[in-house]
Image (cartoon, rainbow, N blue to C red; front, side, top):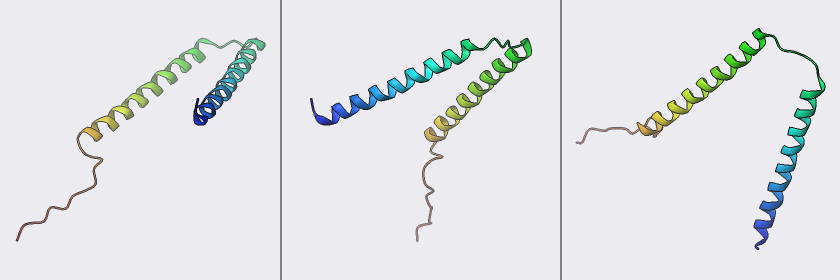
Length: 82
């Protein structure tokens, strides 16, 4: 196996290990508290997630359409022929 593949595999293992530690910390912090969220809190959370998804999808759609219609291309100067 080439050396660069070993480096990629090692990096992936380190990153997955950090992800596992973050998830474990998140789960332990979530279960250690006895705080409750009211109905208003859940409503605000759901609205925040939905609005974030709408904004993200809208921006991605704008990027897609501007790329398809050529708005991302550099300007071209049209000179009349002499």
